[in-house]
Length: 335
Length: 295
Image (tube, rainbow over all chains, first blue to last red; front, side, top):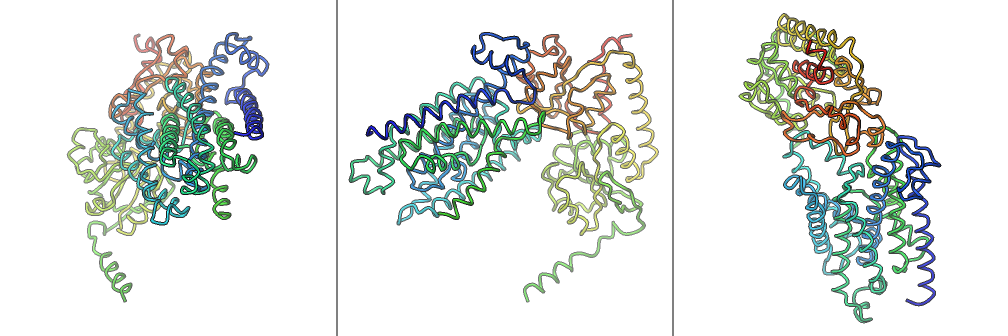
């Protein structure tokens, strides 16, 4: 990495990381229950070691409910945006997105199987979600690759096929399930962060950071791949290996976030696009920027979801889709 | 040409349902529709467990020709052919069973369904109770439909007496702050429009979500924690099996949990607005105010 790019990356990422920290603090002050601002800030600054005059309930709301949920939102957003940026670079298609390609649905089917057959064993969810995401990725990739290579239209079409097929699998499973569990599933399928599992939160965060770092380390190869696979190969990129790495890492990211929160749509589309728009299409900058931006986006979207009709709640996926779908149409018209 | 043939075939299928001819009357249902129903009804299909229970309770179980796969009470109901479940009723077997009336719970996703049955001259009667009185009204309406008015009135009178007995017993008891956990993850509760909220009120409780709009809203974890409920009701067991048998994480430090006031009550007595809802009422009241019933 030359010095100019390195500096630009560091400055952009530092600025976004600072913004992320500020947003985490600000959004933890908002919720269906009002908390005293000064005392909450004081307690947050002490990392929960001091209650700063908050009552036990207020302290629990802040540290047991809101903060874990915000951190999960950050991890889910970071994961999905990073995965989206990875797919877009590898497939040379700005519309490649985990949700639209059916990869989130693959992870959702995996999670459902885990819930139905191993309901009590939480760690089976991310593992089966990862497997589902990987299988869906491979299916889309195989379907999209014609003799002329993967054209953008063919890729989206393959995504539609995989998405609708897996949707019908999901419908099939829900019909077989008992009625009482269906409603919570339909909510979860739209993407919902309210069921934040403390057991899975650290894992989800670790996977997000590791995945973003792994893809950033392959950013140079991805930059060359954007010239075309043959040119990249001639320039010394191990195309096959990079493809496997991106597929594995992106599936892991999508799998862990879907296992934790269901299918939050459009994050992987909106955020990398905005990152490229504002910072250029160099993956060395746009991938880490997408990771941080995805975290910001989902934190804010989920804050809207949990406050706008409080004390009732909306699924966060409804908010991200509300923003993402119009942008998708805009991108489609420009493409 | 093909279109003409199709239309001819379609129209050839429409006439000729003798069972549904003869004198009719109009009864207004909970969707506010005036439903035209034959005076003598001997073929009924129920599309919800609570309605099946009502039909049997008014003594018209022998006139029930179809039910859903969720309808498991009374046990005799299971001998009746199932026509899908409440969420996905199956139109073909419904029509093949030649019912005169189809009983439906709540008005959701009903438009197309009603139109298709109407085309077959089958009446669709909608029930949508929001409180115990509404459930009593359902019982009376269904009694009237199947020609068991006296039996229905008798049943309602018995249920009303049991209800008053409960309310009388808890009359001077202190109100207990109740949280009703319809589901823990994600957290759902009973809102303003739910008959469960009415039940809790009559049982000497004050639901902390009584003013939340909707019947079954998804509820904020932190608001549940901040509400500090003194008792938590978990509808579980029955046809729910082991589902919903744990208190949501946000409520694990609530006064209700710390004092051991978490009450599991058979979901079939709380989620089905039928005669057994009064069992549910009695169970809630006894749980909240054991002393009032020990005397």
